[in-house]
Amino acid sequence: MKEIIHANKGLKRWFFFWAGIIATLAYRSIIVLDSYFTRIAWYIGTVGFILYFGHRKHIQKKRSELVHDNDLIKVVQELTHLTQKQKSALSYIIKSVGTSKVRWNSLFIFWFTLLALIVGIVRDLFF
Image 1 (cartoon, rainbow, N blue to C red):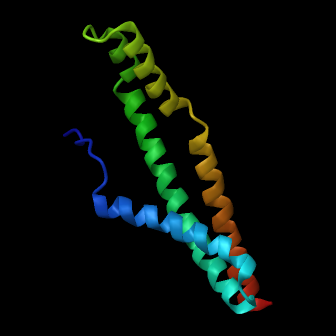
Image 2 (image 1 turned 60 degrees about the vertical axis):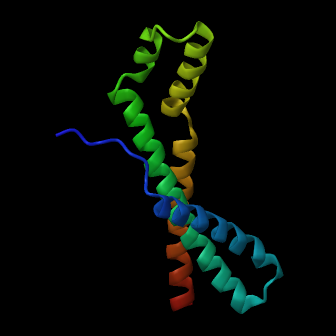
Image 3 (image 1 turned 90 degrees about the vertical axis):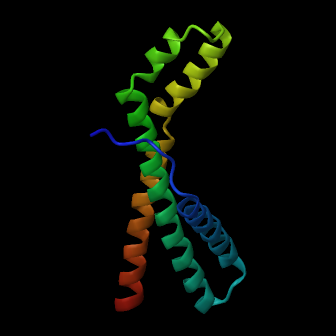
């Protein structure tokens, strides 16, 4: 049975949205905090970025697979009720989903933030 394509529930989208906002605020607040609160802000920001960029990578991969698996670039070109300008615009958007480097950026940020979290935990616990 084919999977039904649907967007994430609103609550899930809000969760990852706020994870990104809180992580950003936590990282930006480090400059004005004393050392104890700096560590707390760093951990909150780091975990938030892991959640946010892990989710972004998942969504970007899912979108790219949908474009490829459903041959959407070809489908758009075969539509008869769109003008050539509309086809070009829609093709550009669809192609950019599959070729954008933002997926790799999210992957890079996710893994290096996870590595930073592990290093931070080891450092705080053993040094």
